[in-house]
Image (cartoon, rainbow, N blue to C red):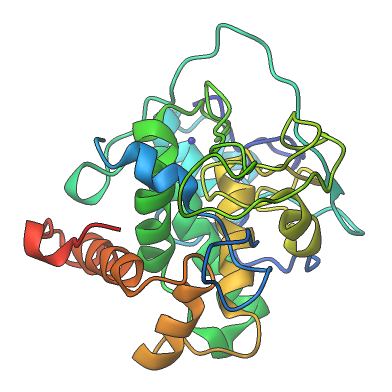
Length: 290
């Protein structure tokens, strides 16, 4: 996710990265065979199978440092630290102008888009403060993001973490095999549809579940399912809910099954989680068909 800068006085704007801050707590789609209706739809997965970073704990610039050389945009992004808004975030999808371009950031492990890596690591830092017992690793969030939307269509997101084109799953009207019918729950407010729901954003939440868990990952006071920073933090909150500990493989498996009640899905997510943690791409045998 540079037009991020570290000003003398912190300001709040979409795309600012939060480090070690506590946000107000804010996914789940219905999957055929899922344990309950709070599980997330992975419909987008089947359509997409063909395919920052130290803590921002530096003090604000002192007067004597004012003449220091200006850092590169990506360094500024990684050092950004903003003020967290007071009160719960506004849940909405932000209308954005045309002509935006993908963030120009260095790629992460095995080619992961840099803007996506920033979002996942930002969520890890926030959750480490808000819910340390969960021990959420950023690489698990990256595994989910890879399987659900290939990190917003291969990192096609601007410097603020907003996809160049909105990310939507298939309409859940019963026409796609393997997905249940999910009637409209948001009046089209988040997914742009009336009559039926569809999964939204790079982490693929159903509107109703997004409203329940929605979190503001970049400190702008808005929880937008399309924004990578908001979506990554919300996914982390969802996976951690119920006092689960990601250090326990069994509990991590339970958490991932909330997204898609399929062990093949779990295998894919865990394979990518390991890959991003080690820098070694998974082999085909580790990625069973979902």
